[in-house]
Amino acid sequence: MRRTVTELKAALRDMRVQLSLLNHHIGTRADLKDADLDCLDLISIYAPISPSSLAKRAGLHPATMTGILDRLERGGWVVRERDANDRRAIVIRVLPERNREMFHLYSGMDSLMDEICDGYGVDQLELIADFLRRTTGAGQVATEQLER
Amino acid sequence: MRRTVTELKAALRDMRVQLSLLNHHIGTRADLKDADLDCLDLISIYAPISPSSLAKRAGLHPATMTGILDRLERGGWVVRERDANDRRAIVIRVLPERNREMFHLYSGMDSLMDEICDGYGVDQLELIADFLRRTTGAGQVATEQLER
DNA sequence: TTCATATGATACGGTTTCTATATTGTATGG
DNA sequence: CCATACAATATAGAAACCGTATCATATGAA
Image (tube, chains in turn yellow, orange, brown, blue):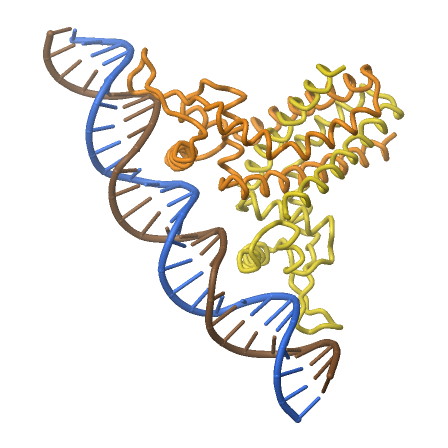
């Protein structure tokens, strides 16, 4: 049991590294830095979101976020829009066009994942997905703990 | 079924982002760039390994790898040793001392993962670990596909 | 052996990115 | 209306990245 847990953690670490690597290569193809791609993911998860809260969430300096958003906007990945209620604030939106291009870059991984999932039943897939979501939650908590 | 697979993929993406974020914060604590930490992971997975093959694996320029290894060595994370057979070559080794420090930085996440795993049986944990390993394999294949 | 070529790692320099601080424009409370 | 706070960005100096050159070593052929 203990051994199984240890092996699972190792598998999780290996997977994290490999997915980072995959993202790095996808970023290279799309002419985006690793941090840019992470932010793009964060934006699509939390959109609409402001640059400042995005910077907090990503653990980056606000001025760094300005540079990242400049690149993302220049590349046509996102747009900045003024918040109607608070005109100091900006909300970031993803543009669907290049998002589709990104989708295509992930298509190789996507179909491989389809093949993997084919080998499981619905209940098993839900078990796994639930585990992944719990792990995400643990990651959030552990990250917050480190921020203090 | 199709919907379950889609949700699983979304959960996987969210988890990847969150783990990257956690790593970023851990890197900040340890005074390491994100890429440095990724390389440190790769080194512990594939050690002993040379700078050039590490650069290939990480998708980085050899000169960039020199800078990363300079930082890792300066910080006491790894050492460079000359290869006895090919004296042009260098092999990188991790130093156990600071590795323990790293272990401590991950301890928060580690115990949260223990709690999560407590809720599963051995057979379920093995099912999940196997899925993670398959996903890692898919990530490797997809990465290689992008390299051409 | 000796020489030409290939290879591994790093040095160097120009370009890009990061980040601390200052600045601008807007909101909010007194 | 004014003082203060806040969001975003401009600016500039430091750091990192990466194409190219360099140095040391290896390999293969004559």
